[in-house]
Length: 250
Image (cartoon, rainbow, N blue to C red; front, side, top):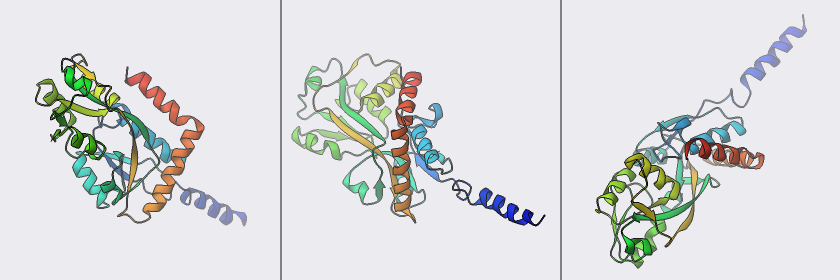
């Protein structure tokens, strides 16, 4: 009987001092960026699934996901109202306010045009119009815009860019080729009538961003990178990506 208080103390310690039980789930903010993130996508999209797997790999509670317009979510993460956001491309302005994880995804960015717009497909872009949604970084295209004296158009969403391209109100859109193909199918039911240009294709990466405004931002940043390294090393990362592409991106 004398052992009971000691056993009870051990039991209570295990219940309340474990890494998951001792922490409240974090609330993360993201936006609609199909097929990587979206409230109406299967399991919230590929990036969302990977982020959950990263948290699980380091014994952190599954985070709560909130979807907001990109600009509003970004500003609230920047101010520390949310500890982190994803997936984002890196640029110098964002690095002032966020710690960037190791790459969450590696993309191939491609310029798309109407299939009949031969000059655009061939890269004859002088004075053409480039559509990039408001809130998306344009830093990777700054030199291209300058080189070709392009007009930059900034509507509210990628869907708006798609519709502007379809109606000849813009000449080019640019993004990850998987994202563009997915959005074209969602918006028009097909990718017919639109083609990728082989000109100026770029490799880029997206990241999980930890707000510098929160307490222990460095700790969260390091813990996330640790979890990401674990799921890559175990093969879980590749398995998640391959499964999602097979089941949802064909």
